[in-house]
Length: 157
Image (cartoon, rainbow, N blue to C red; front, side, top):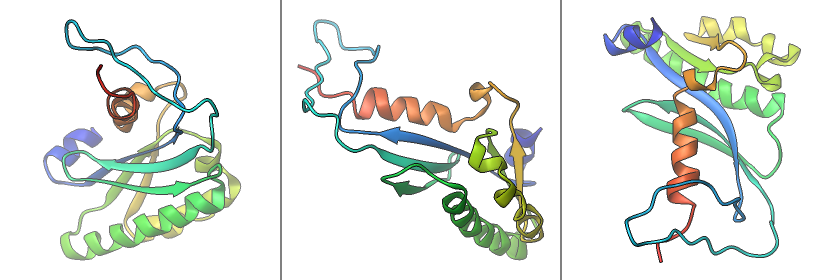
């Protein structure tokens, strides 16, 4: 129903999720051109991991926050405050709310986070929590997979 409402222009719809990236990657299953083999050159040390909290508005935008540490509730709240200010401007201009679809990760449902929901709703930002174990319903998951398998997996040899 949310995707239909977004497609008909009744709401703005975004998908949120966190993922981690590093210069060192596990070999993944991927496709390659016939006669070519995918080659992954990487350092022996794994190095630091870059964590990203992304927001995908299909066909319109991809926004994100970066951290060299795990995202905590305070980080998530700052990101959502930013999104709430964007939602508030959109609500004033168009009368349309913004809905963010996300999983029930610990920072998304913490007590500290929940204290902000009413304020965000007043700004026109609503949170839709997906059922447990349903990543296929979060459209940003496909983007993480595409980036890791196609963009970061290394060149063809």
